[in-house]
Length: 277
Image 1 (cartoon, rainbow, N blue to C red):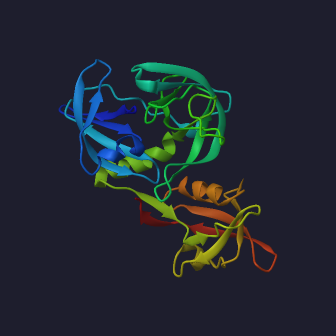
Image 2 (cartoon, rainbow, N blue to C red):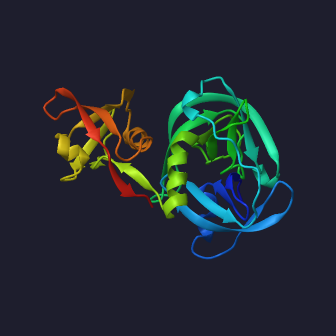
Image 3 (cartoon, one colour):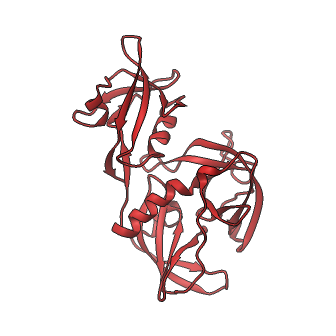
C-alpha cells in the first residue's frame, strides 16, 4: 500500500500520481484499488510508469475531483515549513508537518537493477511506510514534492520516521509525469558514459565513453573524473547520476573534469535522450 494524489481531472476520469514502487507488483497482473478521501474505492489502471524516477501515473474512472495546485520546488528554502499527506502504516488521511531540512540530496532507492535516483528534497516531516507516493506541500498548500523514500539505519535496516524523509521535487517529476500522460512512457537525459563502480576517490570516474554520444562528441575522455556538474560538486557516482537526471534531455550543462593527464577542463555537453525503464 501507499499514497497518491489527484494530478488532473476531467468529466469522466482523473489521473493519480504515485510512486512506481507502490504499484510495480501489479504491473504484470493484478488489481490496483485506490481509496479516495471520501472513503469510496476505485479500481485504477496504469497509464505509465518510470522506475528510474520512481513515478507512476494511474487513471480512475471518476471525474470532477479536486486536483492539487502545482508549486515550484526550485523556490524552496531550507527551513521552510512543509506538510506530508498520506496513509502511513495504513492510517488513511494522515498529515505530518516539518521543515525542508536539505535540498538537492542525492538519494538512491529500490533494488539492484531497478534503482531510482532522486535529487531529493529532505524533510523532517514524519514519513513512514505507506506515505510513499503522497504529496509534500508548502505552506500555501501547493505541491512541491512526491514523498518517496525513508532513511534507514545501516545497522539492521531499521525504517520509519527518524527525522529523515526524501521527496522527488515536483519540477523534476512534472516532466516525467507529462511525458507519461502524453505517450505512456518517459525518457531520461543521457551523458553517454559508464562510471567506474570500483572507484573510491572523490568524484565520479568515467570508465568508458560511448562513441557518438554526448560526452564523446565534446571530447571528454575515458579515465576522466567528474568534479562538478553545473557548478555543483560531485562526490561520487551516485551524485553524478542524480545530478544528470535532474536535467531534461536536450539541456546543455557544464561538466568539469580532471583529465587523465592531471589537468582540469570544463565541457559544455548537450544531454542525449533515452527511454527510461
